[in-house]
Length: 482
Image (cartoon, rainbow, N blue to C red; front, side, top):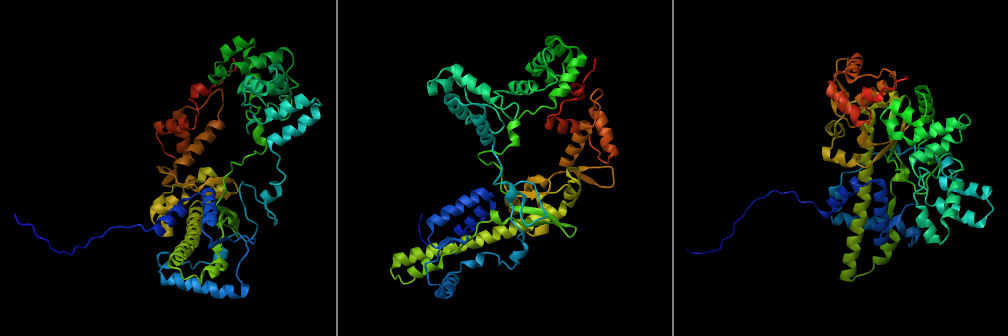
């Protein structure tokens, strides 16, 4: 068999993602906090980038800056860097709030100063609040030190997470002294702070109730110590083990519902776990609109001063480095602009589609899919998915992840043909909250009440949603007075 060589032409189509396109996609799907870290690293690695925060110093002569920047743009255009990015012809002023920017939370104000700007600097954390009280209740230096040490082991919810035995061994002190410090902390405000578990937290709060003294306090404490029976609604056994009548158990249970299971949450935390909203939703001239949060959008510029210093270098290796770094800087800036523009368009499409939610609440949430928003904005569904994943929207009702507004549809019997599944959950939750605890609503009854509101769902769907929200069945919710 003869072996020969030949030349052939073959046409083949395939998708190739350039490094620039990969970078643009990576930036688009990054949450704000990750993006800020990424930009910070780029500013350190790329000398041709500078932060546009008003503090960066330009090395070049200001009179030559404009000319040098024009030269850099021409050089980049000669390498066809900008051709792959959609032209940004939108007026950026309309995308940002003309007033103060927002960083987190749900408060709004009509004044010039935002709610958070007024409160962020004055917010007292739980640990600061406790430290201030320790200095007022004890003059003993050892006890003061131990209290301060234990405060560092209290979490944001107000619970003591350290083990007193380990702390005593670590500090080489008697365990009794550590216990004394812990007992002192448990007398501080807020009531229930420094408890080691939920039962202790509730008992500490019951001890401060002036209505509970002597035997009543002991009975209430016994009820709390048997929270498992309370959760099971086994009031007869609960009355037996606590030495109370059924009426007294019902009264104690009513008192327990007024207690705070996480007393520390009313104060700020040392390490902020709040997300940074990418957009802020406000109502202007009778219409809801979304505006970019300026604080969440990194601001970077080309460092034309450093570029001017490197312009005279003729060395091939240095010139290649300059071209590569400048190209990456220019592409990064354009990718950030494209990311901001896409977030702005997608968020406004969501706000317009879910205007009923912002006017009337969660029960008015409409069924919405990625495809619906993609068609409205004119992008692919995967782009909408990347934009909404890990991006947050600040509204008058709080901060929501953009993905929260996407919900599947359920058929209805009322004027609307469909309703969002999340809306059905909220209706079920409301109906159960309003029920008579002595005669709780069965799933069948919930189905009928939902039909009366125009929502036609099966009983198994109601049971699925109820269980998904952690709500027990009607028998588990029933409270018997006797």
